[in-house]
Image 1 (cartoon, rainbow, N blue to C red):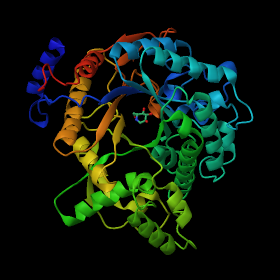
Image 2: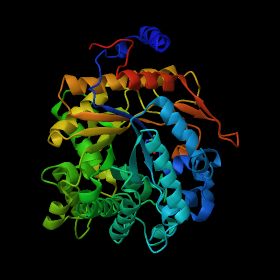
Image 3: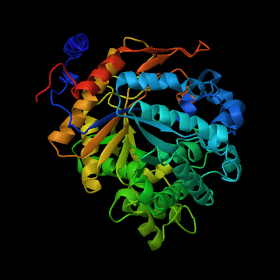
Length: 495
Ligand code: NOJ
C-alpha cells in the first residue's frame, strides 16, 4: 500500500493543477466495491455447447471491417472455459460484488424460451456457486448488447414484440438463477443499444435510422424493462427477495459558459441523453422528458410527419413503467461541454437535430485511450444532478474506468480511480448523495466492441496472443485491492 500511495503523491505533484490530492475520508462501512464485465466482451466460446448466434457474432463474422483489426469476441478472454481464473482474480481483489452479464443466446439459443440450452445454464450455475464460495455477490445484467440473431431477423428492438419476448427470457433467468442472484439489472446502457445500434449504426446490428429507429427501439426496451420488473415483483420477489434495476449511462454535460443559453443547452442535452431512459423509470411523474416530447413533436410536424417520431406512452403505460427500480444504476466516464446553438435546419430527421446542442471536450484535460477526457469533478456533478432530478435515490455506480494501451504499470488508471472516487466521497459526505456501491470497469482487458482489443480498461492484463489468455495483475489492481480492504483511497484515512 505504502509504495502505491507514495507513487500516487509523486504523480499528483508532477501532474499539477488539474488534479487534487485524493480524499482521506473513509467510505461508509456498508459501501460495496466491485468490478464489472459483460458476456460478449469476455466469454468467447461463441459456438460452444449449443450457444446460438447473437448480433455481435453476426457483425464480427459478416462485417469484420467494422471492428478494429477485424477482431471478434469468438474467444475474447475465454472466460467460458477459464471462469475459475476470473473468480481467483476477484477473490484476490477482495471485491464485494462482481457485475457480469448473461449471454441470452447461450441460455436460449434462438432467443425464445421454447428451447433451453442446459450447458449454458450449467455454466452460469457453476460461476454463481464459485462466487458464493468466495463470498462474492453477483450483480447480473440480463442484456449487455448481445441480442440473439433470430430476434434481429424479426426487426430487433424497434419491433414492439420484443418487449414480451424479453419478459419471457427474464422470467426464465429469474427462475433459473434467482436463488443465487439478488441484484438484477435488465439492460446495460440502453442508449448505446438504441442510438448506436438503430440510430447511427456504429454498434451491432449497425442500422442507420436516426430519429426513428432509435426512438422505436427505446420505446420497446423501456416497456421490456418494466415488464421484467413487474414479473420479478409479482412472481419472484416474495420468495427470492432481490432487487431489480436498469443501468443507464451518461456523460456529464457542463454548460460551456455561465450564459443562460448554455445552461439551457446543457440541461436539454442531459435530458435527451439520460432523461430519455431515466425519466420514464426513475422520475416520480414518469414519461419522457417534456423537452424531448415537445421538440420531437414540433420538428416531426415541420418535417411533414403525421405524428411525432417519438412514440407516446399511454397514461396506463406511464404508471406501469414509473418506479420500476429498487436502486438506480449509473455508468459514467467523462464530461463534455454543452453550448447553445441555433436549431438545426429542418430536413432529414435525426436525433442530433432533435437535440440541437453542440457538445465538445475540453482539451485542457488529459485524454484516455478511449478518447475521453479525465474530468473527475464531473462525477460529483452528475451524482448531484441525478440526486436532485430523481428524488434522492440510492445510486450504485455500475461502471467507471480508464482506458490505456494495456501496460502493467498503469499509473494513469490509479490516478483516475483515486480522483473519481474522491468525487464520489465528496458527493456522499459533502452533498448527502446516497451512493452505496461502485464497480470499476473492468476486471480485465477485454473486447471493446468496435475498437476490438486496441483499447484496454482492465485491472488485469490479458495476453490475447496466448491461447491460454494469460491474466497478469496490473499496478491499478493492487491499488484497488487496498482501497477495498481499507475503504480508503490513501495511506491512512480519517477515522
Ligand atoms: C460501456 C459498456 O457498458 C461497456 O461494455 C464498455 O466496454 C465500457 N463502457 C467502456 O467503453
